[in-house]
Structures are given as C-alpha cells and as structure tokens.
Length: 136
Image (cartoon, rainbow, N blue to C red; front, side, top):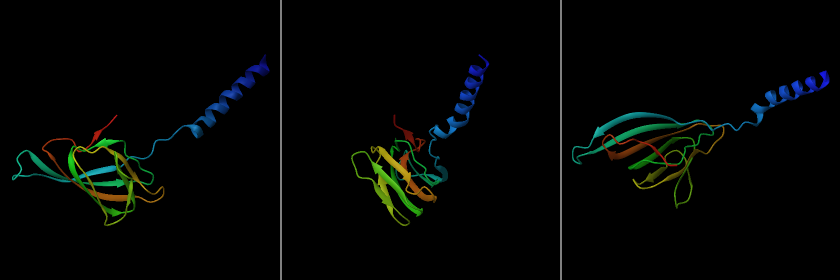
C-alpha cells in the first residue's frame, strides 16, 4: 500500500515538473505607440493617426481589421503581411504595404524568430474609431 502511494506521488511530481515543457506558449505581442492624431479639416469626420509598431522576435498579430486606409512603412527587420484573398508578402526596410478599410488582415507577423522588426502605420479613419478591431 505504501509503495502505491509513493508511486502515485512520484507520478504526480513528474507531471508537475514536465507539464510546463508541453504547455503551448503564445507568441509575444506587438508594442504599439500612438505618435500623433490629427483631425482632417478638409475631410470632416476623418482623422489621420500615425502609430509605430514593434514586433519582438516571433510576434504574431491576431486576425483583425482597421476600418481605415492603412499605409505601412517598414523601418527595421522583416515582416510578413497578408490580407484575406491575397498573397502573403515579406517586407524589409523601406518597403510598404496597404490595407483598405474593408480588408481583413489575416497575416501580420515578424518574419524572424531572433530579430525585432519595426514599422510605422499611417491610418486615415473616422474620428474616434479604434485603430484595431479583432475578427473572430
């Protein structure tokens, strides 16, 4: 009886020690910073919002939309971007990407597992509208 208890305790200990090794870790999140927001007087109800995005190594965005005209300019590293119905593209420093207000952004990620990537996004959107809307 005592041996069965010891075996049970050892099995439980082994499970507790090894479980974290098998737990699926979620990828790191992007760091987003608002750089500026400006009402577009010539287009009532619209604004320009400029944000910077830093993808740590291995970062992946969830599927989302912006409900805006989004213009991406890569500063550093390499990113992969893709829209529903389109091809995934790999972009490096100085390269650009465009998303329309009805596009679904299905792929947004750092192309590297070891180096960060940084880019700037200019969004033309309705005033007060969120920058990012997750899609289920």
